[in-house]
Length: 390
Ligand SMILES: Cc1cc2nc3c(=O)[nH]c(=O)nc-3n(C[C@H](O)[C@H](O)[C@H](O)COP(=O)(O)OP(=O)(O)OC[C@H]3O[C@@H](n4cnc5c(N)ncnc54)[C@H](O)[C@@H]3O)c2cc1C
Image (cartoon, rainbow, N blue to C red; front, side):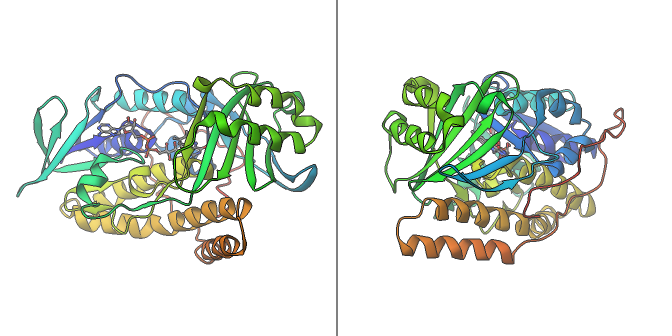
C-alpha cells in the first residue's frame, strides 16, 4: 500500500516506521524546514517507552532524557500529596521529536519543508495536494499533523470544529536554577491558579508552567507574569529564587497557549486516518500525548495487518481500542485543571462531572506487543508503570 504520513512528530514518525516495517511503501512529509529542536518539556510514561522500544528507538529517548522526580502537590506552603513518577522520563520536547523523526527517516523517506494543503478522494484512493503546487496519489493518507491538523480540517471537520476549549490559558516560562538545587518537581495551587514547576534534565533550568482561568480572548504573556510570580511567592522559600526571573522574563522567552483538546467523533474518513494529536489532542498538561500518539500508531498498524484491504474497518477498530484511554485522559486533565482554577460553584460542579466521567471510563492499557526492531535487543525499562489513570 502506498501511504503518505503528514507530520514528522512523535506520532507520525512512530506509525510510519511500523507501517514501513510491515512492507508498505511509506513516505513522511513535514512543513517545517528541518527536524524540530529545543523547546519545552515533555514526559514519557512507561507505555510510551515500551512502544519506543518496540521500534528500536528506546535508546534515543533514554539518551535525551532523565528519570522524572517525584512531584509534590502543594497549596500555599501546605503539602497536599506526592505523585510517584517512577518509570517516567522527561526531556526537551523539540530535541526528542527531532531525534525520533531522524531515526524514522533512516527507514522511511522523509521530506521536510513540504506542506500538505489539500486532499481529494478518488475511486482508487486519495490525492494529496502540496503547497508547491504538486499533487500525488496515495492509497492511504495518515494525518499526524498535530493539534491544528490540516488533514482533520479537510477530512472530518467538514461543517464544524471538534476543538474543546475551557477558557484556561497556559504561560510557559523557563527560569534558571532548580527547586533547592535538586531535581524535585512540584505542582502549586492557589489564588485560582495552578503551576507545574519541573526541572530540566540537560541544564540547570526549570519550567514554570502556570495555568490561568481567563475565559475567551487573547492575552499577552507579559501581563500574566506578575500573577505567576505571586503564586510562587505564596509557595514558600524553596520557590523564592524563581520569582524575580518570572517577573522579569523577556517577552521573547515566554510562550502562551490555550488549553485545547480534540474531541472528534470520527478519526477517519474513507482512506484518510488521523493519528496522535490530530485525532485526539489531550493537551500538553496531561503528560499523555506521547503515549496516545505512539500507542494509537501501534494499534492502527496492528489492525491494518489484520484487514489490509479494509482501511475503514481497521480505522474503526483502532479508534474503538484507543478511545477509552483518550476519554479518561481528556476528562481527567480537563477536570483537574478546571477544578483547580474554578470560579464559582457552577464551574466547580462542571469540573467534578469531568472527574467523575474520567473515573468511570478508566481502562487498562491496550498496547500491541509486536516488535518492529530487528537489530536492537529488548532494552529494559525502569519500573514499568504507566500514566496514573490506566
Ligand atoms: C509545548 C508542548 C509540550 C508538550 N508536553 C508534553 C508532555 O509533557 N508529555 C506528553 O506526553 N505530551 C506532551 N505534549 C504533547 C505531545 O508532544 C504530543 O501529544 C505528541 O508528541 C504527539 O504529537 P503529534 O506527533 O501527534 O503532533 P505534533 O508533535 O504536533 O507533530 C505534528 C507535525 O506535523 C507537522 N505539520 C502540521 N501541519 C502540516 C501540514 N499541513 N503539512 C505537513 N506537515 C504538517 C508539524 O510541523 C509537526 O511537526 C506537548 C506538546 C506541546 C506542543
